Length: 380
Image (cartoon, rainbow, N blue to C red; front, top):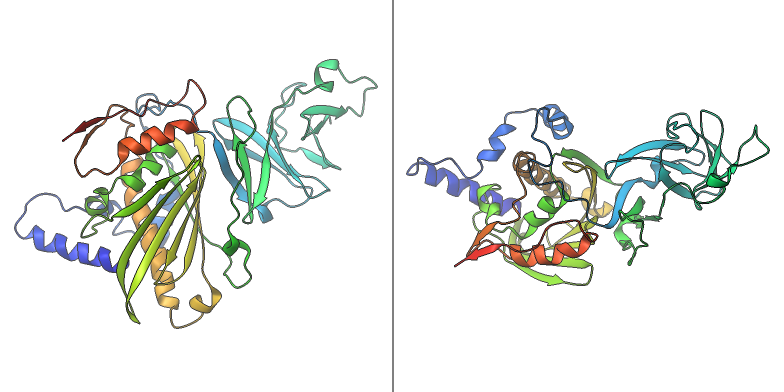
């Protein structure tokens, strides 16, 4: 990847001497002169005065699937945290039994936010206002310390509870606007918990766009030339399952040990669980945690892990370079994603990649009445 990007940059320089058009990697000029600290701040900074979600055709709902919330070790036993995802206020806590529970945030009594000052009592969540205690499995009130009577409206399910799975050192929840049960599970990735692999190296972004636009980027092959400066677009082997999709890119890559056969495998299990394996240069697993906050705002956390034998040995520099290059490419994409519309009636030309196929497939993630048709106009 790094070698091809360098090749692409050289090609751009050559073209610049005879071509007055903007260089293909112009998007990166926004941040190319920033310091490391400035880039880190820019990645998560607010973008004020941006157009509304409706003006950008992003008001289509959220695709249904498993989404990451936080690392498992970011929620201790007895801890309560407020969350904001899927344009909803939520509260998460870990009971004395070690189990994480997620529920909508507002008390059914007088509307206090349970995530601010709420307490764990056993496995129940206690409201900070009047100490009503909620069961996060059944979504009802189990105890009111000052009253001998629990109102019948809250003795039955009165709160939306969310499915939770803890896998790959990450807490996941399943989103469906009507609360339907998950049709599949989070996939376990052995590298994430292998003691021979490193602790997670984390990088964060805030993207002001939609998860569908981000996902579609993976099959938009020409943009690798015009955004990332790659000499030629990648050729991927694509497969489509019931809920998952996979892309494999194979390439000859230069390393300190000479040219090797490189392989990059990108897999998505639903819209919210995404991971990439890099093989050949330096073994790397990237878990791309992308969760919608609002219709036009995403929280992005990239977690990288690599074999300890590589990052502590002679390949250490190359291992760091792979992570740096992937981060740089997301920085370049962010410049576009933060300001782009979703174009449901896009006009696709020869060479654009399988965008119509992707949209047809991706439509299955939306609940009935949400999302957009997968149709586009294809021009020869």
